[in-house]
Length: 74
Image (cartoon, rainbow, N blue to C red):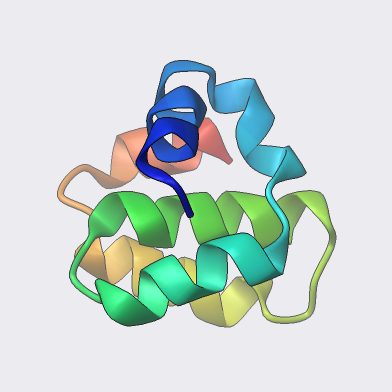
């Protein structure tokens, strides 16, 4: 993922659901302690009704510092 795309997704959160799994998954694997990456991946999985969503939600919740905001985004 390009830095410009990442910043655009942060500024316009409604675009996060349009991210492909192939675009966000390398970011999560390369930077496993980045809570924003885990959150973006969970939002993407939730918007696609993926069976992987529940497992990723648990990971995102463990990395997230404010779970209230996590669930507001979902």
